Length: 475
Image 1 (tube, rainbow, N blue to C red):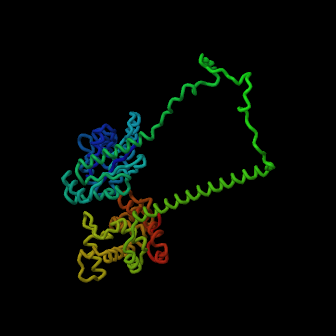
Image 2 (image 1 turned 30 degrees about the vertical axis):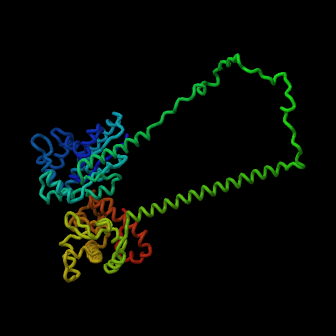
Image 3 (image 1 turned 90 degrees about the vertical axis):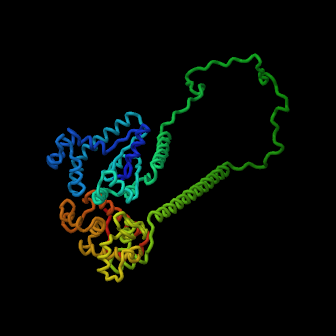
């Protein structure tokens, strides 16, 4: 049985896909439904939540007050983490039980619908993952309309989890739900055909039955064949063949015989030559395949990790004492080198700067005639973003992990982490492994990974510049 994860950010349309799968008769394990069952009246997780948060979060009927708890956890990351720790063992046990039930039922496919599939590590139980995706602005509008949230409430819930784009980057299969429902369901049907063909091709093939005569053991005597009355008698018995049937001797024999040792040596030499030639051909074919594979891998890396504006990056790195591959990695994760991109919350350009932040930086850099439209210019955007990275370095003792996290989550959030002994042992630096799970940790991990790739691929000769700037270490 193949287990397929279904994930996507809030209000992106996972329910539409799950309903179609259920309609077609496939088992769908819904993490949200299980969570509601666990926190319903007399649910197994209710008392643990009461002990952790108090009676005010439990409704009079004995169920979790989901609205009140949602207001808390979407505004307080520590409370959200504590709730996750309480729910994790109950949720894990229920999900594993239902996966086993699907396996016993004989279903070829089982779907695990989990909004936090990656955040909670359930992707490790899946053979593949389908991500239901929406553009951020469309996701915001649907969430506000569906749940009646204000813009601020909807944005707080969207920012509390991994973004739709981040989930899509991690997923082998992406279902674009920005079109019509019919388009989405058509895509789901096509994916189902692919998955079902995989399950059929991996099933054990039965051996075709052999011919009966070949199946008879050697120890079993076979009945003698009955001669036909029309059989022809064997004339070789007791009959002398005429001379014309006898083999004629050669007209002349060779005048000398080749010595045996020479014959053996020539045969051995021929075998060695054939083996050597075959080995050479196989080696050439192998090296050719390896070369083509290497070229394809390099082309794939080039497509996945583009590099543009190298002169602007190096110039700003030199001006603000930064590492060029670090700047390249930040641009990759902020905008994928698209200078015109603007996020749903108003961040603009290659390094995704907010209007108020950009205006403040322009004042610090004494830029005359500044306007927010200037951030569409790659040179200006990179220079502003690098100034801000340098500024964050001065605030956080040039600890690269603090700088990257603060660039994503803001200075206040990182100051809170540094003050928390769970995340920082000395109050000055952060340890990647100890960071709270969430979008910022994922962002920092990707920047650190891409830093190494950009340094090795594009900035190998710039090691001297790295020594003066901040360079993160791998987690």
